[in-house]
Amino acid sequence: MIYILITAVFALLIAFILGAALGFFRDFFAVPQNPMQEQIRSVLPGANCGACGYPGCDAYATAIVSGTAGINSCLPGGASLREKLSEITGKTGEPVQALVSVLACQGSWLHAPQKGVYTGIQSCRGAKIAVGSTKLCIYGCMGFGDCLKACKFDAISLDKEKGLPVVDIKKCTGCRLCINECPQKLLKGIGANLKGAFALCSNVSTEKQGILKTCKTACIKCGICVKTCPLQCIGLINGIPVVDYSKCNSCGSCNEKCPTKVLTIL
Image 1 (cartoon, rainbow, N blue to C red):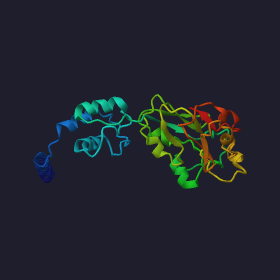
Image 2: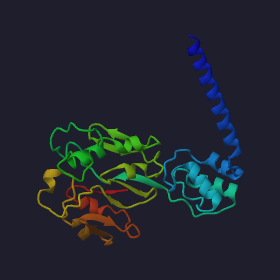
Image 3: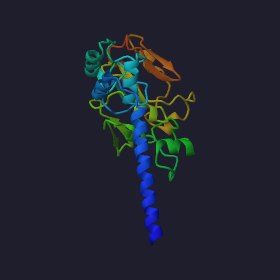
Image 4: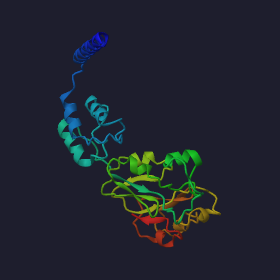
């Protein structure tokens, strides 16, 4: 019994000495923090989303103070944050471009058939690695909701009937977390105030035959949108319509003629 007590006292003594030593070295080697950095950090959103190009808000605050980053890189904070940072730092910056995420796919479970019963890891990335795609359309959304889990702003929900994510543009901050998370690269960042036509398909296959067998709402590469656009503001890249928004006036003629309604008007 006496040996147990001696061991316990000895362990407590070592723990005390180590704790005291760690506290001493922490204070001795502490690097004084710039008060401005604390101010900057206090007004940043704290989402640590990485949209600014830095690992988190602390790193971004450090970069602003050191002069290696501007005050307009925080997309979630937007214009109001830029103004606060300008007051703190005295710096000016270009207005932050407000972005929102849009899903470039309309291949719901009804329109885009499954290859079969998938029993693997229930994530888009896991399924991508395991089988390429759970759908016949290898470019389509698999609907496991990786983007939903990545979103820190509760801006994405899953439409269970369609099996597709839905973005609430009122909550979306344009942080790009969902865009970076999607293994199919189906979420696109566009200007929040952008007006014009947008293609809801990412099937870049050059094989026109059989596209509708993989998805009834896919772009069939017919090019009728290009031919009917009165302003000639639509071109095809890998068969997908791409719009020149400097010319588009949202007339809707491309959407009216599109046989699978791939083009939507923003």
